[in-house]
Every structure is written in structure tokens, then in C-alpha cells.
Length: 393
Image 1 (cartoon, rainbow, N blue to C red):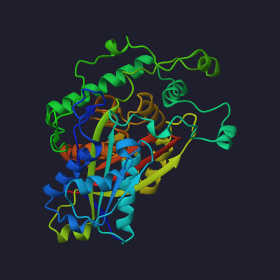
Image 2 (cartoon, one colour):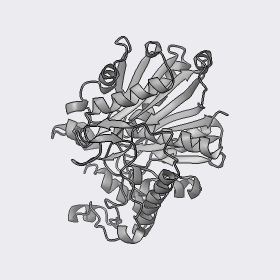
Image 3 (cartoon, rainbow, N blue to C red):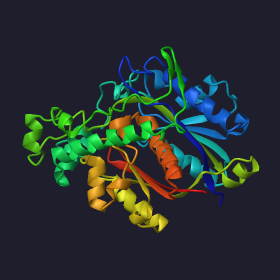
Image 4 (cartoon, one colour):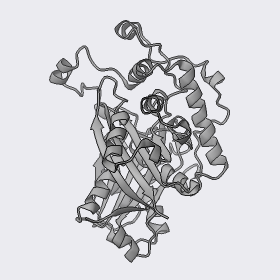
């Protein structure tokens, strides 16, 4: 079996998904094409040798409806014979793209695969692909009567189940901004970010980080998912989820060059990390956001490792209650959890997020001299991917 290795991982800056956001004027195909173009160029890779491009994208509608990885590859002027496919495992789409890329190499069927992800939430609004229709159908609705709830309500259910207070969530959210600001100020993101050309100019830094965020400021925000109907159905909920302790809607793209170790060495490229173990699992779709807990347990068992063996944990901050419940359930060290901030500060560009997390984790491990990193993220429908990587010295 061939050994897949990470040769490079990069991302665009994270931009607010607002009409005046730094990347709002950039078509998602153009956004991803610039990331792919720079990934190929900086590794002096012959693009004709790439076997496949696997792209994570959630809202496959409008400008993201046309197999964005394929279109971005061609828009970058790269060889027409290289194919692409699009993966939708909701928030974990590009993390799943990494898994599929590595598994293709492990099988011996391919040697060089690019995993990537893109989401322009300013141009293709979240949920637009539903077209106002019921996506579940009567048999599903019957099984889960009286019905599932939105992710924000699930976040409050998670907070209630794990005894997390509003002050816990706000303190965590403020810490995310503080850690991301510290990383940005010290140049911690410099190696992983590639600049993006926009009609408004060159975008080279994250614009989502708010250094002045404090728990006191966040405490003034209104809980956004409370209703009389849901309060009657879920009396245990204290309604603590706000715009300030949830992830930001963001525009962004990310990409990773994955090769067999043998091919990387033949090309004179340095393998930066290897994959220790993968997992993907489902959990209760009502709570929806809890699957990172069993996914972590399963991937650690596959790797024959303990959580304490891991130096860096990336648990996507879809809502503050998600990493906090994960930490509380597993007894994880908070200093190792999202040490450079997470989606509350950096944003959550859906299809690009899985690879954004892994890119940040790889660079942070290299900078700290540590060896193992573990990543997991909740996904709509109550699923989660988990990945353990080992940095190679």
C-alpha cells in the first residue's frame, strides 16, 4: 500500500460574506482558480501529472453549480485532461476531499491528487440550493417527528446537555478572536495564506478577526434562535447562542497537494506530513453537532493513540458549544484546542473549511515543533469527519 503525504497546503484570506467583503467581487471559480494556480506554481509541479482534483463545495447552486473544481482548474489555464469532482459532506466537504484523495493514493490507483474547497457565501447564500423545497421527505419526517431543528437550536441543545452557560460560550468566543489576532500579529498565518486578486485590489490578510472582542461586549448580544414554540418543546434550553459566539459566514478557498511518498521523493519535493488515521461517523441528527465526539474516539482507536498523545486539536467552531462540549466530554486540554483561533474568528466558508482547518493545523504544528494533530468538524445531518496527521521532520 502506498503512503500518501501532504506536500503543501494553502488557503485564501478569509473575507466577510457581506456586499462590501474583501472577496465579494470575486467569482468563486476565480477565487479557487487563483489558489490552485499558486499551489501548482510554488511547488514547481507539472500540472499535467495531476491525476484528479477533488473539490469540496456545499452550496452547489448559481455560480457554484458547475463543478467548481473543474472550472477553476481550467480558469487557471491548467491542462484540460485533468478531471475534477465535487464533494458535499456539508461543513466537512473539503476534509472529506482530503480523505478521498489520500485513499485513492493508498489504493495505488493514483499518485498525485489535489484536494480543495471553495465557498462564496456572499454570492451563493447558504441554503440556496434547497430552492424553498422540503429536502427530507415524508418517511424521514415521520421517523423524526415532530421534526428536526436548525443548527442554531441544536447548538443551544448541546449547551444545555453539557451544562455550558452563556458566559462559557462568550468567553470561548472572545478567546478565539484573541488567539487568531495573536497568530495574525506574529505572522503565524503568513505561510499558509496566498494573496487573491480582486477588483478592489490585492487581498492578503484575513478580515474577519476582531481583536477588540471581549466577553463583556459579547454579553450584550441577543440570543437569536429563541421562540415560544421551541421554548415549550425544549424547556431545558437557556438560549445562549448569539451571532458573537457562532461562526462567521465567510468567503474563502483552500487547497492541498497530496502525493504518494515515493512520487514526492522522485520529484524532489519534501513530504511535510503523513496521515495516521481517518474516520467519519454519524450521530443524533437532532443534536446534529455532537458527532466530533464519537469521531474522535473512533479515529484515536484506529490510530491506537490517546487524546493526550495529540499536541494540537482543531475542532470546528461552528458554534462555541461544539468545541466546548467536545472538550468537556473528552477531558481535552483547552490550551491545545484551536490554539490559533477558529471559525468564530476566522469564519466558516463551508466547503473550504475542512481544508482551512487542516492547513492551519499543519503550519502550527511545524511552527511549534510538535508531532501529531487531530481535526474533526460537525456536519449537517449529525455527521463528522476526523483526521490525525503526523508532521514529518
